[in-house]
Image (tube, rainbow, N blue to C red; front, side, top):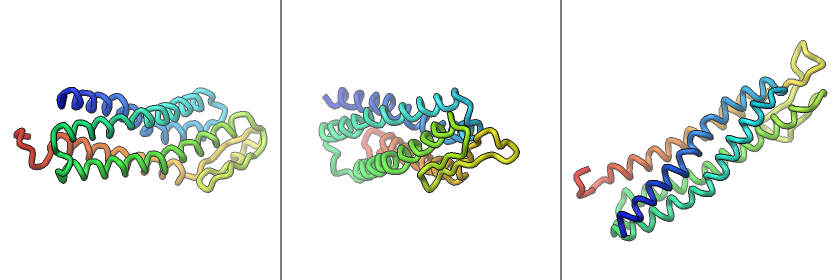
Length: 181
């Protein structure tokens, strides 16, 4: 039964966490492109897709710690330090995704969508995204995101990815393992 839980745990990690890490990493540069050219519908659609991938696979990602816990129980390693550290880091990664990454993606997506069909300056109610009319193009609307908005999102995404990489390393190396790893 242990091998069955382990296989499901690893598959869930690959299928659920992998897409979130990639899509979340692609979002900040995509947001910069979309904000630089508010008329680019393809850029806005790409952002919507990336955000949807992050939301959906974040929900599916709950299977990873659930199956990991079942695997650890069947292996009898629930009290091992490497596993406790992995569980704590997994919780922190989930908190970073839910509290810092996804909300900022939504704010940037709203800013892009707000600027897509307007002819005048629009204000977006957020501290990190500002809308302005581009200089020299009074007839068109240009959305200039506060550079810190996409930079902060990229930073939080990097932290999320680093936490998952650390968990993966702990799962492979397993300090004190008797399997020779």
